[in-house]
Length: 148
Image 1 (cartoon, rainbow, N blue to C red):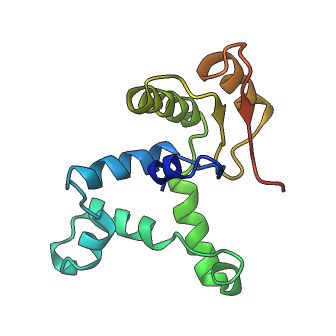
Image 2 (cartoon, rainbow, N blue to C red; image 1 turned 30 degrees about the horizontal axis):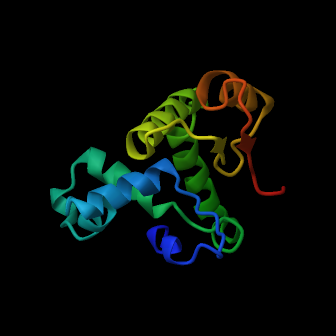
């Protein structure tokens, strides 16, 4: 879709090309796509290693909290245990931002001019990191987030 815009210069659109999407598109272009969740879901249970079982549980808990998880106390408790274990290191955000900037430079040949942190990923500390360490470096740029 991004390339198609060249044919319609009067049409203006914004595409949120997050690093994970760019990486996935590159893998599809190289025919290297292997969907781990799909492969694990159809692997016989007796052949799953403990690490694969954990990963399958992690994939399975990408659920709608409001409409599904919160309706069932047992499911909510299990979700909280799995979610806490997986996302307990907020300092990893710095490394994720560094990797995102590096990927952007490799693919697009320049540093990003803006950042759209993941939902719930904005704080004074994150904004400071973005401004001073990653993409803006004193230059005009932008940070966006959905309204809360």
